[in-house]
Image (cartoon, rainbow, N blue to C red; front, side, top):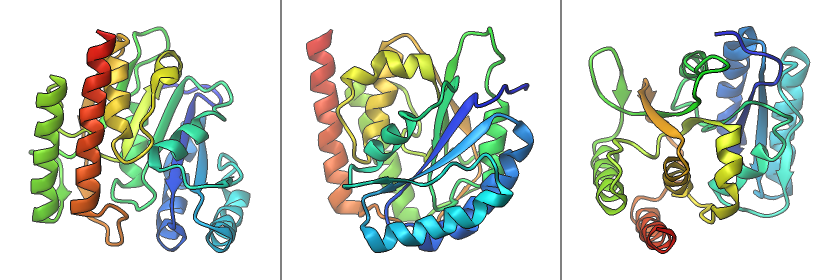
Length: 249
């Protein structure tokens, strides 16, 4: 695939991730360096001055060897994962595609590169690409059993409540056509961990195809999601998304 300058604006949302991103970010820079038009923007989601300083040291230390890595964007308050992603996307610089990848490296840098290479060529109907943790031949997914089971329950909830046959709405790697996002952005309200469910629903309702792409994935210790607390909040968000969707129909 031929990528023109700044055609992909890739955000890495971070909340207290300075201890984990140090291994992943250099790999990400190397993986996308040959693609030509990928800009990487780390967004520090209001973790506080000390964490922001630590994250800035990581980013600035890499920038001399990674010209496509933008200066750190620091949010004054914690907006949630979705809020951090959307804040980063606001600085897209005219990119054709907007993307995000989790900072923990659970979805390896090589998978980010592979997904970018799968983007449709210019002039083709643009489809959003959502990474999906599907354990199948040719793909490797290493995940704790309890998280896998909870993920399947949540995916079933999303599918049934929103009538969308999605296998995995929560994998932390997604690429979205900028024009499709700008069309639906004014109606987006969820900024927590369930933001990508609302984003997916809005894209589909707005006429943008969403394609799930199986990826390799491995569990990384130190995640910020708390199974019981955050799963309940995410379920409530899905309910709200369903209710809002019914009002608009």
